[in-house]
Amino acid sequence: MLWNRSLVMYDVETKSNWSHILGRAMDGEMKGTRLEMLPSEMTTWDGWRKAHPDTTVLNLSRTHQGFTKDFYKDPAAWVYGWSVGRNQYHAGMEALAKDPVWNVETGGDTLLVVFDPTSTLAQLYSRRVRSRTLSFSAAGDGRMKDSETGSIWEMSTGSAVSGTLKGNRLEQRLGMLSYRRAWNDFYPKSQAAEPR
Image (tube, rainbow, N blue to C red; front, top):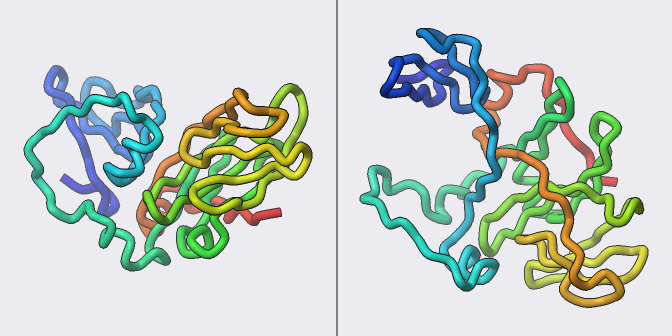
């Protein structure tokens, strides 16, 4: 089923219908109940294995053949969105593909939005490390560098791999990749983030 041209899920136990973008039951016994949002990633298998070399995988039969790198043929159709408090924000994937490391301030929160075009992974992190706010820039090959210490960080994991902050890890925040149209339908007041 679709609602606002977007996926509707239902639970087997109560048959309640859930919006996957809102994470909320829209009707049925569970109406108004919110699901807990968990971190997830849309990335290539190669990108996942590079970031998580000891991983295992659950291989299910595919019901849709469209989730390949060709999925991103029109980056203007996509946004990466997140919430801070009761407000929503988004970054256009077309702009992120051109400038893959964004230092942003949304809702008083200092955040980092990154996109690795090779693995197609978008991530959201806090820029606070050891009670200090860092500023990042792209360093090539899926890495970034902070201006304050020159430490090198993995975009996919938020881990510092060299420099004075080696061993530290950025706190991951929750965000989601969405069709721009669907994000705007569900969050019409979402603000476009701008890199600093």
